[in-house]
Length: 307
Image (cartoon, rainbow, N blue to C red; front, side, top):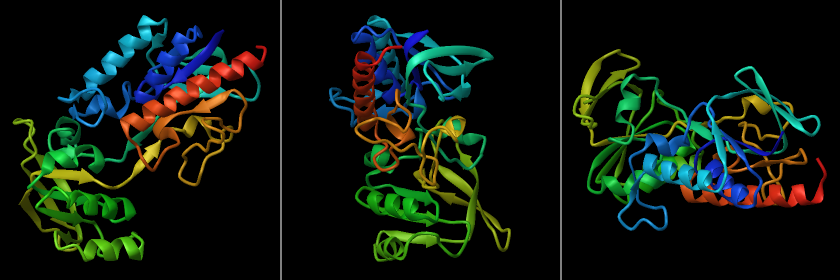
């Protein structure tokens, strides 16, 4: 029986673990299917307060993990396969073992949609990015490609024109799903051009650990060509890691958990933090702040309820 179980080990989960451990709640952190969250897949983080020279994403995660362990948090690897939130104590199944807890903090994050190319994982953080706000600064004066046809792609492309010399929006169709106002704004920007209907078939150069060019294919003619680019941003959306909670926790139409009064979900004693409910900001610092809120809310809940 645990007082607090935290699902997820990114910025939200680790911050929740630090606060919960300091409150003497002895939290158990379940790493989840993507240990360390999206920061573990990036390189330099320059917008997290307290690091004037920046810090590598995996190092920030490792530091936070050690900090949580210092105060008494414990960790366990493995993904959650099912939960029963119908009554307290809640039941959490990991690797065929059932764990019980008085409160639960869901910080399972959201995974960026990718193109499904073998080179993506190798070049993520080395010219390939899923976050314009996080990485746009590194592409000052560069030529970059944004993949996608929805509002996310238009918003990211428009933001990236603050830094890049040219932004090409590449979409597999001639028509766009983006709203008219977002599409018109992108079309009016002199730094943005459109390339349709094209898809990326490969990324180069994995051996150099640096994105230098892409192989693209015209969907209509099937013509394949090579295109130089200094960077590729995937603007095709994110998928919140909430499938295991369907039917038990309230979600919006895209699967993001809904919260009220801070970090509270519709189930008393269950709290949410980070990208699992935040589809607007999606930053390390906002996830950390949400993790702090969830831990404090859980502590207050435990103080007012008996197990």
